[in-house]
Image (cartoon, rainbow, N blue to C red; front, side):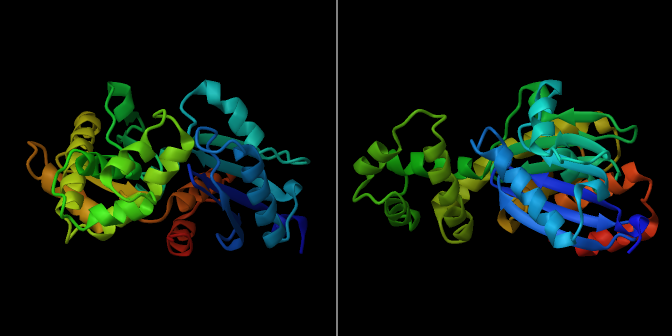
Length: 318
């Protein structure tokens, strides 16, 4: 294999709970992959080591060295401004590499993956939450920039547990599931189990791992439906706030993350948006956030073509 044939680009999707890395050659072939723990310093105290380890394992899987990397694009949860570029660069440092490295918020790569560079509004809801709109001129609009926050998957769990504590629907099927999840005997003990500082990472994880129990029961539990509806209302408002400056007759929106792609949640947000004065249309993501990162890396290397986009949307759609 020649030096030219060994050249690759790297895409990284580093969220709150998982880091995914893909190595892709100039023909848009995925030649190496690896998955590791989350890369956000807000959620993981060992985030730098986790990202570096996952990156190293992807290179081994690709049988490549850092010197072969022409460009790298990393979408990173928690990267919200220029002040975060320093830690992000440390997370993706490669000894012996002289290629370009670009670090953006993980919503940016998810938007590229969903819309392939076209305008639209992306709802990210999984471990974290963000709503990002990008218009035809490439301008970015974020819901937090207008002081709006919708909620991540764990916020469903907050809602359900709070309703259980105050006695809403005590016979609902989620009540015993919640007691079992927190290993307590009754609702009073549940309250005691969750009493901790709001920013406690252990408590956040406990609520986050309870969220799938809620979406799993979206059709049979009144508490689940109420929580999903409540979060869908806030999310739809955020979509409208971010979508308003885009100015299109019909604004496409899509989702990324475990909650934002769940059918019950998508349906609930769609129903709320149908009540708005502006038309919104759900658009299934063309490829994954990791695919979006790779597309940006190919673009930076000057390797992007219409055929590479087609190949990657299939190869990295999971």
